[in-house]
Length: 164
Image (cartoon, rainbow, N blue to C red):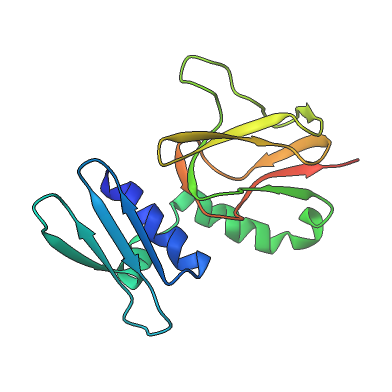
C-alpha cells in the first residue's frame, strides 16, 4: 500500500465520522482512530510492528489543490451568475480522476459533446478500483473542471453541463 493510498484512506475516514477503522491485508495492518478531540492520530502497523503516527491535520495541510483546480475555483466564483444555469457533475468518491478508460483509448467526453443520462463521463480510481462515473443529467458539456490524472475529493465538481 502506497503513502498516497493511506492519505486518501485517512481523509475518507475523517470525513465519514467513524471513530475507528481497522484494515488488515496480507502484510499490513492499519488502524485509524479519530475522535472529537483535536489530536486525531493514525497508527500504521507493518509486519515488524513499527508504528508511525500521522495526524489528520498534517495530511489536510499537505493535500493542497493543484494550481489548475485553484484557478477554476476562482473563476467559478467570479462568474457565479453565468455558471448558475449549468448543472455540475460531481465526484461520488475520493480518488484519482481519469478522462479515458486507458492510456491508448479515446477520451470519454470533450467540451461540446452531448451526453445522456447513464453515459460514462470519466473514471475515478480509488484503492486500485476503477469506478465509472455515469451522468445523471442530459445536456451539453460546457466545461471540464479537473485535469486528467489528478486527485479529486468527494462531492468535488468535475464537469459543467448545459441542460438546455
